[in-house]
Image (tube, rainbow, N blue to C red; front, side, top):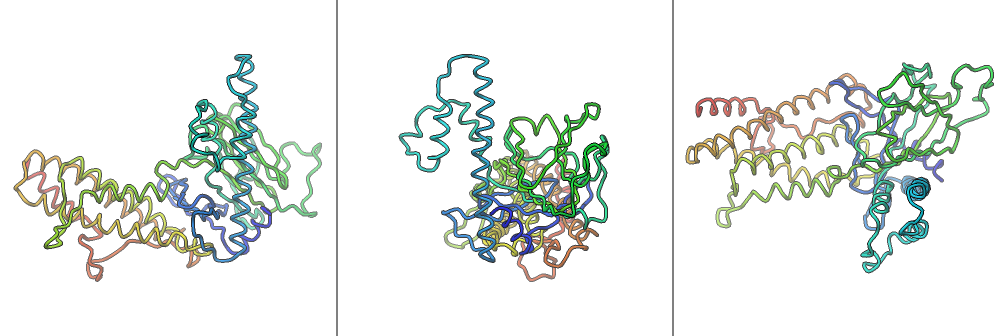
Length: 452
């Protein structure tokens, strides 16, 4: 089912090369990817936030572009559940072994405890869930409850150039040495690998080969930031699964070494969702808008507080919504529409909030122009406000440039980055402030100097 899902998603053009940013430059990844997972989840790597194509959970109304995409996402969700159970078993085995060495008696029968929790996860009653569970068991669940999978696809024979593994002579790399980022600390990663092997790609004679077989895909493993200790290359065949358990992703780096046949993989992760979910960012917007009030008679908008700490918090949320969500989403063009339109409504909601935040910025500007405030408070407000506007100006310039880079321009129309939100002075968009904040910043800098 999973193999059919890979092929169906590829057939419906759901895999895309990501435009990532490394050391201030934009690159297209050689591997094509799509993120599937819990509705509203995102995953950020190399300064690019990917948004999940949601798998079909009961509580969400998800419309897919075709029944095959629905079936594919459902199969990946089932694979996710299976890998969660396999990972718990693997870690549980390790923990039992370690505990036996440390002490002969155990307080809880872990096997029984986990069998119950895995088969009845969703149906545990409140009375049952209030039972005291050892910290180890809670931690184990947190570190193995995969909330998304990053799918990868690459056909090495279609690549004009592949980077060579630089330290151990391991040959062509599909993915360079790295740690997986933005994951829950010490969480596991589970990878299902599917190489589309055929009779034309035969394994070489091991005796004749000095290094790894270049026809076969491998995962490379090395001690982090160490090129003296020899690296390890593990062959991956059709349908293989490997797990990176506990702190392996922190203590070691891994790479993916290309074979000759096309390959898919499904890499299941416990993404750190503290700042990466739709629920989180909508909550942040609600928090910021608590400082906005409407006069019941005139309907005029005003700010409840001009305290520096409040202004700072609101403007930081403003920047987060604009640069971590809206611009990240539209930077990826209309690619998600190949699978589902699920994200369009939430993005429209976020943009609505963001427009109110623009109004709030303009209200701060109006207030600091007045001289009625206590001078010390005014100075503090202007200083922190100015810093955040400078950050906004810098990031707007960066994102505008990213959308116009050679790599961006080379993409097909539906994948081409869109610089959104964007407006000019002659646009009839009723924006309270200009897109280019240079004059506003200059005015505030003069105001600070004049006050001093």
